[in-house]
Image: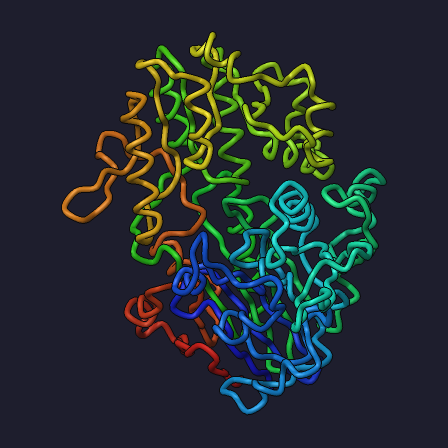
Length: 528
């Protein structure tokens, strides 16, 4: 018998944690950061206490109460005593690993808390993107996916109680297993084994997915971040296929088409399928984004600011092509440059910044006097490609700035002219916190008299993009009709929706399909 227990991703988008168990072993399908649950309790100035280790996350229900799977350096001798009689507690030993679908933190973020010896199975691109994001990001203790800083409980002189603090020992790397490890270059292996943000790193060389006790199938799919995949697991009850996040309207839709064909040939017992955009009837393809953005930018006479999702490399390349065709310089942030450089280790077709005439790197006006290692390396390697706010201010019509809402504090130094254009190529707000950010974004643009294109407007309590300005964003998720097609063509015996706020969409639209559609509860178990 195979058991599936759902510790996250039920009636929520993100936070997916699905435990698969049978006689062969135990695997988690993703181990994500549950943004919606965090927002319910926490905000910018109220966060889980790093010094409390696992305590806050376990008490608040942000981590499953699974003794035996988490890092020992965040544990205390008496921590689990208060949970052993609590609801949903379980001792879980000998976890065989995590099948990671892609590098977005809502699928990967809580890997940070797992024991370092728990293998993470992922595509090489996902592993490298996760490391690049961690290298170049804020290394908070709850987002240390690829490597982590061990902590120790310490009681300072004069204090009655100890807290978890950085131990000062070498940072430790997790064990990642990827397909076709032997095909990676020596330079790629060197990147993986060398710490970039931290100076010292106890590395674990990349392993191969063949080491898993289960027979696995990795199916590359199209999503808004490179390297995404679906997984097939052969169990004693038949094949279980987990979709991760996917779409059929992106530049690499053929990958998802291949998944449909190959998964159908497995005659799966179970398909666990995402449902982020079940209520969307159609999605704009990336080609439409290019055409609509090109038209708007061609007509712009001043500075252009392009706002699109982070780590969406396909969208970045779309705007690079627009920059080439309009004679402008696509001006990326150092994090973007670091990510592109990392991806070139695996995909040589990714543009080389040093040789790309239409790409430069923006140095923040208040850049730290003592930059971290990765940032210093970016500025040194591409020193002749770095531009300052003054360069942009004096030649505004030459640039497309890759800025999001979080980069708008650079505008006082740039002083954009009244002929500037803000091209919004991302999604509408999905919660009250994001709605407030959009109000602030509108206030910034009004303050500098920047014209917006494709930016949602608030009308009668709803945020909507003006009809004439639609088609600037290709979602990372399949629309409702495409999801139904995926389910029908793979045709599992059992369909389980996850990563959706409206899972009823599937039984409402697949009645009479011959599939048994199960809507699990959070912490619920489905036996097969």
